[in-house]
Image (cartoon, rainbow, N blue to C red; front, top):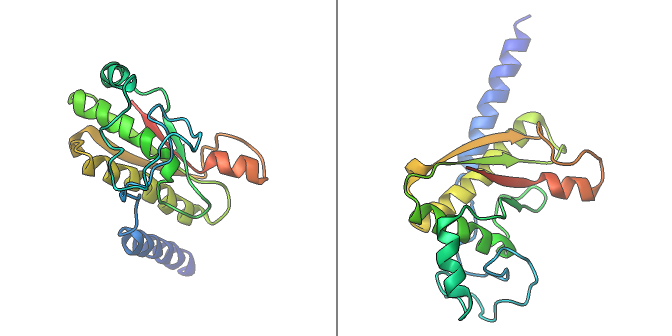
Length: 181
């Protein structure tokens, strides 16, 4: 009878240790970006090698649309992650940057970052991984000047899949962070 409470306590302790031990990893802020300013992932819209210069700069016709984008919630509200990783892919940095611009321009806006995983792994591990993914996005936004009071983090782990299925196509669509305004 006492084994069950002990197992729960041990699982909770291990989850806390996993979160604390992995909290130093996060999204990439080194400026390697291959996505376009509108969030598409064509792979050819950025010509630099990633010195951070793509942040805040846009080509001629993009500057007027950038002003409009600051007043509207960005259309792309989901970014995806690699298996068992919590680092923001370079192709999604432009999406996160568009949310940072919107939140800086609208200080009263509130947002919840929903972290999700695929179904592989234990429930506890996936809850922690979903939280690490959402925290990575939150750290990235903080570095870009977004107020911490505008953001909160929720992890759903594997509990709310976007796509049902047990193949890589379904898994890849479930490994995500959703920006919820």
